[in-house]
Length: 306
Image (cartoon, rainbow, N blue to C red; front, top):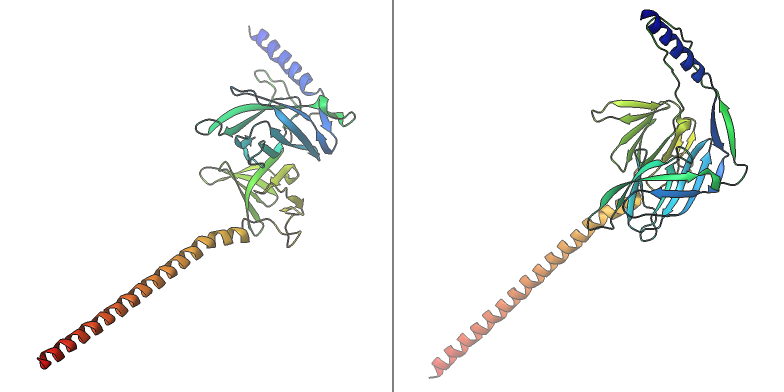
């Protein structure tokens, strides 16, 4: 029995070692922007993707999609929430991450088509067969394995991890070399010292990656930030190409000041009205007093005449 157990352990170790030594082939799409076919499944009513554009940069893939419905307000993909960029028209979501082609990607979307908002789970599948010929190549990527030793009662462990990409969208705040991003779904991320962290519920920072090349950052207006010298900068900023986007907005300040100005005008108008009313009352009272005095004098003259 003991000899059979050793033989079984040895066979399993050989099988695992052989499997880990095989090269893994993955499809790679050349950098560029491509129209791509996309299907959406889930929910009680079938939905159709009217158009989809695939953006590829440095191996990272994102997509812009449009759904044949005006009722979707936001979509959550890989923990990141994207708002509808086409209110009043077909629901449009730009810059959503695409982890793989020809593979269903789990998403959630809020619809207001019913009496109250509902969040429904869907899957999106992007078809590689719809891409132009020649943009997809098959790359052989050897998987690194640790040296394994078969022991009497042990099994082999693999230590392979694939590089993961992250796409984050939300309101951005800058504090020196620290960038904080608050996404629409309430999650908070921190980029500091060349690393991406997620803020846990207890306030601790959980490191997600130390390679910012694998991170895509979008501001709340869906502008993609560029990585330069270890920092994400907003190329669309009007005052400086090197300025990191913050949440400060002159337009927002003017909007927040408008109610105060209106309140001051209303109060001032009310004070003026009150003063006018008091003045008119005093004037009327003075007129009445003068009339009474005149009547009294007339009565006195009449009495004297009698």
